[in-house]
Image 1 (cartoon, rainbow, N blue to C red):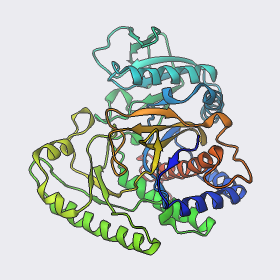
Image 2 (cartoon, rainbow, N blue to C red; image 1 turned 120 degrees about the vertical axis):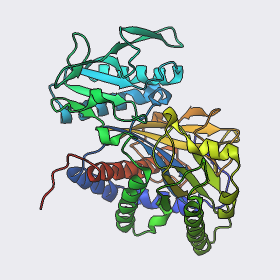
Image 3 (spheres, rainbow, N blue to C red; image 1 turned 30 degrees about the vertical axis):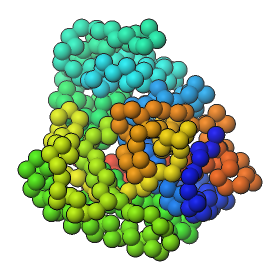
Image 4 (cartoon, rainbow, N blue to C red; image 1 turned 90 degrees about the vertical axis):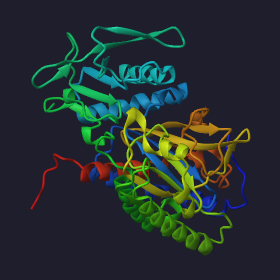
Length: 431
């Protein structure tokens, strides 16, 4: 199942697919050398948009919450990748403490937690769940849609370690993106591995830092392949102090959006693209598809209605938005059963372990698909995403198309690695 691309502009992407397949040994060697210098994030998911003329990541999540959308066929890959990751970090690891999000009534999310428990259990670890929710004062059972249960327990903090009653883990895995801030209970845990590190949480992390790092990675990769980095890199700008509630500094947003739209227009002209460019304005921190809007004309920003201003001013956990990133809009021309779709690629350690399509029947090609009403269709990874088929016509083979998505997703993961190194508060400085 190669998704249907409803555009005549598939030329550059099919060309890119061919170039990536022909350069596969060089690409894999390049990644290998990069991973000798940099540490991949523990797990990552990347939203990729395919415009036919451009293929680029638009979001990189370091606390992926959709492992339940991966098919059973993908599990062995995930378990092997988990084993490799643990072996590298703490080979003698026996106990793993998994800390999920607080909104533990969301059954889709709970099924994701259940899948994570399954992966790490099969990788050879005792896994238990600890909650950051202070109202959880005793082991609490949560019922899943299939009738099975998960037990979350209150965290027990000693001076230097974090665990549960009668459970001392060597590794703590966060599946909570820390949008609400850095919990005190996770401070100063120097004796245990905390994955991902605290500065990967949205209390600290910024999308603009990530896409700055991605620009660097895209330039290196484009040089390797002898191509224009714009074909895989969404341009962006940022505004640091916007107040949507009272309209302060909307002019900063307007001028940056206007400048970015002009840059995109020049690129479209260079490539003979007949589309109308657009930009996406979104909170510089945070996830769950909140605080996002599509802008086709910078003048529109001067006349935002109250509803849009309210929508843009607050994101997950009630956090107020003051910093925004303005990102080049990459339309998605992929369709599944006539609904707009975008691939989401999942990685554990440095390995692609699977993915799915995020599909939304009520959204357009230039809108955010991570919104209520989205559904998920597994990617055709049954034939193994890591083994492309030699000789297949570009755009005709599912393994080849997904290999290309995996390459773009790994570039975003490498950028996340650069980003985490650059923002590490405990990094050693060498004079």
